[in-house]
Image (cartoon, rainbow, N blue to C red; front, side):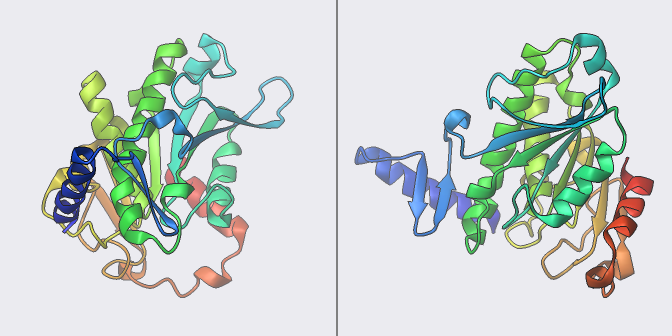
Length: 266
């Protein structure tokens, strides 16, 4: 289904190329379709969160998409753990669950959280375009990490642990595959949080998150067969409450979530 959507889309793009009015980012009502767009156009932003080693204060920066510069020297870069966190459909950097994940990681002073903000390309109610935009978001995330490796001694893109929720899990897959094309190695770890099902019910591994996308891929299924994938996607798959419905989520306290996340994901 996803491949057929791409085929129709590229026919559409070819038509506009022939007639001389092709635009790389296409506006469709409230939706945006981004195909081969320059990653420097700020449709995607990269946020950096970390704890300052000198005074233990939390810090937040927005980095350049192409040539990001980290606020650390080589020794500090080598001693830090880097997490790449990717939101899903309708998400953004201020979603409460996203903040909980970020804050759980930042309780460890040696951890740096890089957040991929592709909210403009994943906005409601634009699921079909958001699903197609996962490839663009993933490849731009890879380009960002390549630029980070080129401009920061001690940083290795392949050492990143990527965490993606819903469509963000597939963004992580595309990013890792692009990293492999550049460096010959994929992310050392990807954690998929309920990888999205619609448009990703395909047998082709390179269109979805699967166990070949990283040295280690772990997946948590929480809405399997509805909005999330039912099939096993990683080296290890966890099916919470059989992977389908989570009746206690609305009642869960934030500190309980953080404790759970620290146990399994730090």
